[in-house]
Image (cartoon, rainbow, N blue to C red; front, side, top):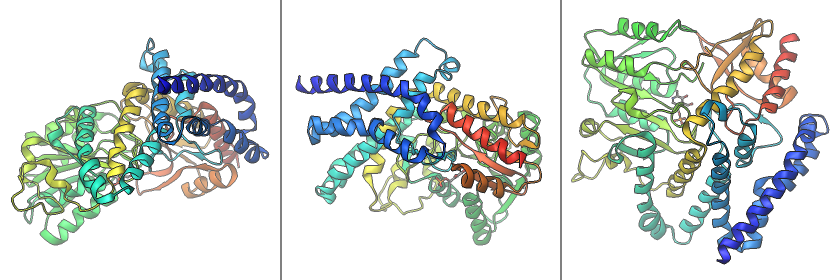
Length: 476
Ligand SMILES: Cc1ncc(COP(=O)(O)O)c(C=O)c1O
């Protein structure tokens, strides 16, 4: 009863503050990046961000109940906002700025920089940060007992939630630290002999290529790489390129679902079908698509799949996931040996890592709830809308060239642009030095430019500011 009253009071206060904040928003945004902005916005944000407000709620509610309230209210706000757009299609909801303003409020966005490198690693919503704090506090009350006996059990719930999100069985999901660990588990865990060939691309991720090159040195495995045109003409062209790269000795096809350099999506299912016709297995590097594009792992027709949960799912830093098709689990060697009587068909054999942070693993659950609260398809459409918003404006400028195709099936939140006659590093440097816009430089043999990745908390005003900054650089 008392608890419900607390929630009601805090919800009402929140609505009032949100109204005030909305009215002030335009004025704040005018100031936002001006020279006086820094002090002003910092003060304003300090007074009015959701986190600060909720911190006050904690004081009102008493420490323990308050911390719990923070999570519930954060989640409640997302569900309430989602209810207001439930009559819209995902594409329409993608343009409902009130909804996305509520999502922005759910993050602790820095007023000091404009972060457009969310592809590297994403921030956690405040509800996840709070859940993590809570699990860390519980663990610290008696780490050996609470971590191994209490929090450890909760990992099974997380496995089930991840499996539901991915559309597969929990018995096929291992929780680990990142895509690199997931994919290298497969690369080092496969039995291969000298002369066996792997087909991949020149645009695959360096960590995984390093692992394959170690197998080249150790075992005499052969790595063949095809080039994906930038931009490709069609999905069919990409499938044909992979087909042409196959030889009678190809045993494994290793490919990205989305290439990190350009944001190009690959037609994984069609390539996997072709590879299976040749008797090969397929490893999919989905570091950039899980909880970004709305799909299920089974849609990809691959055999092995790795992703990072600290990217688009916004789970705690250092969380990842490995999926292996059930019947293939038994034959993959774990990176860290499992006990000798352990069932080698059990996916948990990949989790004998020793002591690590169970709090970060448990807090994945909160990020899944938050992601589901937004709605997977709505999120995908918003991310695509944001990319189109900036990219269409920037690509209309003289000297600017997009390195990403904006067709909906070909890309989503990651896109890359260059400016004629200017080194990508110089553009990236100028964006930060002049405007405090954080992006990343891509200096690859086949793709040169600046990679831009907004996220669900990025506003259109942020992107207007970014577009103006690019215009200034392009004219200079
Ligand atoms: C395509 C791709 N694969 C794998 C990774 C590795 O991810 P992590 O550093 O989380 O292991 C990245 C990182 O950005 C990536 O872009």
